[in-house]
Each structure stands twice: as C-alpha cells, then as structure tokens.
Length: 350
Ligand SMILES: CC(C)(COP(=O)(O)OP(=O)(O)OC[C@H]1O[C@@H](n2cnc3c(N)ncnc32)[C@H](O)[C@@H]1OP(=O)(O)O)[C@@H](O)C(=O)NCCC(=O)NCCS
Figure 1 (cartoon, rainbow, N blue to C red):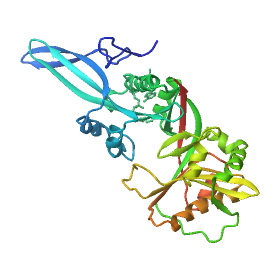
Figure 2 (tube, helix red, strand yellow):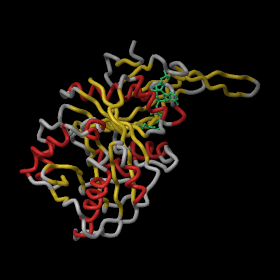
Figure 3 (cartoon, protein in one colour):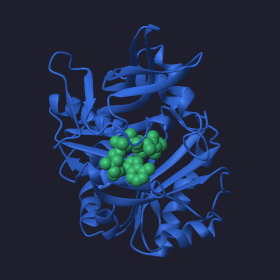
Figure 4 (cartoon, rainbow, N blue to C red):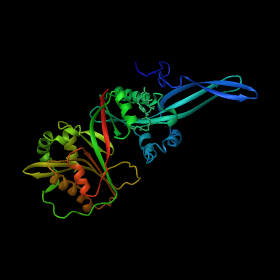
C-alpha cells in the first residue's frame, strides 16, 4: 500500500498515512492551575514553490551536510526552470478551541525535478527539515516528482546519492530505485602545471572518429560500469551509442580521444556550468574518463588538463568525475589527489 495518496478534492493535499505522530499535534499548556490540551489539525500540502518560500527553505537547509548545503546557490535557477518544477511541502496547523483559533503554516521540505532527454527525469535537492524527518515526507515528494514526470511522458527517473548518505540510499531503495553505477569525484583547487610532450597523441575528436569511438566504448568495461552515462553539471545523462548524445558532444568539441590506429581512450569535458557550489564560474569539468591502460589514462587526463593552459579563460578549479575503474585512483594519486568522494547513480522505471 502506498504510504501517501492525494486528496481528490484538492490535488495538492497529501495525507501521509504513516505520519508520525498522527494527524494532530498536542500541546500541553498551563493556564493557572489547569492543564489544557490543545489539539491542532495538521495538513501537509505539496505545491510548487513561491518566491517567498526561499527564506524558509534556506533556514532549514543551511547545515544539511557537514560542509553546509548548495540550495541557496541553485534556488533561483530551479525556481525559474521552465523544464522542471521546484516543489515544497507546507505544513499547516489549525487550532480551534476555547482559548484560541489560529492557523499557521510553515515550509518543511523541498525538492526539484527536471525533465531530461530520453524520457528521463532527474530528481535532486530533496531536503526535509530535521524536525520533520521519518514522517514519509521525502517519500511524498518523490511520488509527486514521479507523477510530474509521468504526466509529461517520462519513462525513467534518476538521481545521485553520496556513498556515505545511508539514510538517502535506504530511501531510494524503499522507492524501488536501483544502483546503476558508482562514480568517483575529485576536486582540484589548483590547476596542475602543463605536462610537456605527450606520447600517445591525444586529440579533440571529430565527427570522423565517431564510429571508432563507438567501437571502443562497446567493448569498454568502464563504459559498462558507468551505466552508459556521463555527467554534465552534476546531472548524469545517457551516453546511448544509438542516440545523438555522442555526435552532439563531438560537435561541441567536448570529446577527447587517444587514437593509435584505433581509439584507445575517451574523455568528455564540460566548461558550461550554470551553477556551482563555490560560487565560482571558472570550473573545468572532466565528466567521463576511460582508457585501455594506466599509461593512456594518465595521457588523456594530462591532455584534458593541458587544454586549460591553451584557453584564454582562467580556470580556478577542476572537477573530475569518473566511473570506478582499476587505475583511476593510482593516476589521481600521482597528481597528488587522494580520497575521492563517491556517488551512486540510481534509476527506476516510472
Ligand atoms: C534523506 C531524507 C530526505 C529523508 O527524508 P524523510 O522525510 O525523513 O524520509 P521518509 O520519512 O520518506 O523515509 C522513507 C524511507 O527512507 C528510509 N530512511 C529515511 N531516513 C532514514 C534514516 N535516518 N535512517 C534509516 N532509514 C531512513 C527508511 O526506509 C524510510 O522508511 P521508514 O520510515 O518506513 O523506515 C532526509 O533525511 C534529509 O533531508 N536528509 C538530508 C538531505 C539529504 O540527504 N537529501 C537527499 C540527498 S540525495
């Protein structure tokens, strides 16, 4: 049985059947010698966010993780997103008794859903006020986002969860999401020095290379372990070899290859990041990394980083996303970069 369902009269009202505590709150107050119990009805409403919700949401999102949170950086982008929906959960408390009659509401949760190519929706930014957790509120948000996608023809939903975020992983499992792939994420605050002569002849791929790139990826264990995806601005997209994804990336000069009669390594880069956690737009991302041996992996990574030195723009940070491969940690350690963060990519049919 689903843990939440919509009210037929008002589709924005959500009753959470497993709400804990039940559908009312009891305040015990002291009036002279008498003790009174004030019963207030609680109603949860899931609705599109208003401009005015920003402050309420940021108040409970300031310290979500050890390092803080990024919702303040993305609020405007998500609020204005014509391709998605920023959703909040509002709790309304209605008190009617001899002493007083009042209605008070507060926003206690938020999330964002975005429509992506390939009939997919991307779910992100689920945050529940710590005082209201384990009341199936995130579950209600997930169901709402899934309905939003379904109504618009989406067939799949995806989301990413940090490897150390167990509560969230359990929540995704409970909602029947499965892990598609595991990714390492490295963040470099210092741009490495330009590497001199590279031996493996890496280059920016052209449309003529597409067939060879597909042949390489089809037999690549890394491609398989990536769930056939790459990252762009913290969203994972399909790298289906039978779609336009690869030709589009190649046209935009985002694919790097190592060619030695045949392709032996592929990397994808991204420079157009609409937002980032550090309020710093000069971020260069390497969003897919794959090579047939450790030497070639190092060469293609160095080639990607060398591109930074030939650009007019100044980059201050590099982010590297890589499906888990045998050599990636060794190569990154050589560059002085250790302890990656890890993320799990979840997906389910909707
Ligand atoms: C993760 C989070 C969104 C869950 O919100 P919530 O409203 O408490 O989740 P729900 O009540 O809908 O829980 C659904 C299921 O998830 C699992 N779950 C949620 N929180 C859990 C926890 N702290 N420990 C273990 N399991 C947990 C349980 O299986 C739960 O079902 P149950 O209560 O019937 O056992 C909330 O803890 C939160 O905001 N965390 C910080 C931000 C975050 O991590 N966001 C997700 C980023 S991907």
